Length: 639
Image (cartoon, rainbow, N blue to C red; front, side):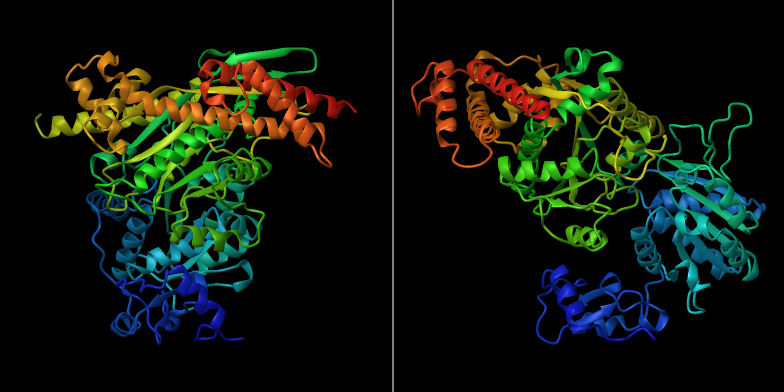
């Protein structure tokens, strides 16, 4: 059945809602008679679907016609890259590896290069291979910006239509029909094969073999990555390795430091938070501090502090949400659509975080999981919305473009540098309003802090190198559900004391005391809190002591008040939870009242006067309530 040319009513409604009632080209309010337009023209094989549609005013649509833009202003590094490749290609180089940081513009860069090679008659067609289904449409749409028409195809589609310059497929499609793609590559002219995020080629034992079968005879191959390493020793097909060291050797690299220096990526502050974790195994009880625990305790400590039913993770998300609200309400440069991403351990953990955020913080976060049938549609809807938070496991991975993400809470137990860098890549894409930058919240584990320092060292190196010139990356692996839990799941008793340990920003390491002094300064001078890290660097340049003068201490009264209020709210939530565990069915009002009486006795206050309790008293009560709840859970598990 031929593809219908007109969008149906349901599709038009979706396009209107996704555009927020405004023309996607000029931004004017859409009036009756607005046009539903194909991004890739119908005459060029573009599908009549919401993914390939956009809402336009009649003026913009009529001026667009069936033409696609054939010239886009490339960045300096993209021009330099393409010139370097063309020199190698003229020397008959078949394979080329590009390492460019996430968000730097690899897709546009290679699309422009491929279009130029087609126009010069150096290749006849293009095949792009990507990790996920969602990236197929994204690649096709991005390539069309420079006139390169790529058709997302399935294995049963044969080859692309004659109206296209090539096709887009996934690694999974190629590996189940390798011979089919080998035939396409050799029988229809000189093919340029672009292998996007090539480190995925080592995800499964036979993938490398299948890719060699499918594309071993390709005329040219370009390998793309933003994280050119794997945590295992799986070799990456077609990739150039140093013959002496065996280390992967990119032909062109454009790292995070250079991208920040050039304004291609926004700077990110990495904040590491310490905490206390306590759990009980079969025959022992363990308590550790994140910053100085043994490596053997790391897996269980991490799962304990990331338990959404305890207090550490909710406190981190509360702090992150305050930072996000500060960006959205910044009086000087508000970023009204700024959003945050929480990366969960697995799908069960992601759902628990969503429930916790609704119950404790009153936030209705979007939950996007790979098992949901409409996950791609919901991901696109979130991208174009103004919703504050999204929770995912691996669904929002490399290549997914959501430039409005500014905050990332690293609430996962993945501890590979590749996955860590992929997470940072989600929040550094430039949108034009990036003076404030982005923030990543991590547990203060040695390994994660070391990854962060290496990322920030790249910024320092690039900035230092720029001064000289001017005279002055293992796969996360798995199927997206996180590492498998142990056969016996220890009882997680406590996770609290979420305190800032250190922050990494623009290649420098700052202490918690330095940050507190800067927070006092920006409040005193009426500067938006979003500029705290800039104030930290300024203070260090002036050698300002990392202590708070006594005269300035009253500026922290509000912060203490907020802490006190949150501790009281945590007690209320723990009392409710303990009462429900004691009497899950029926009226638990008497149990609830009895617990409140006991809490007030411990706080040495009368009913309704908990504001008079000290912070230390409140924390002691929280520890007691958490231990009571842990005992209740343990007793129920034993019955």
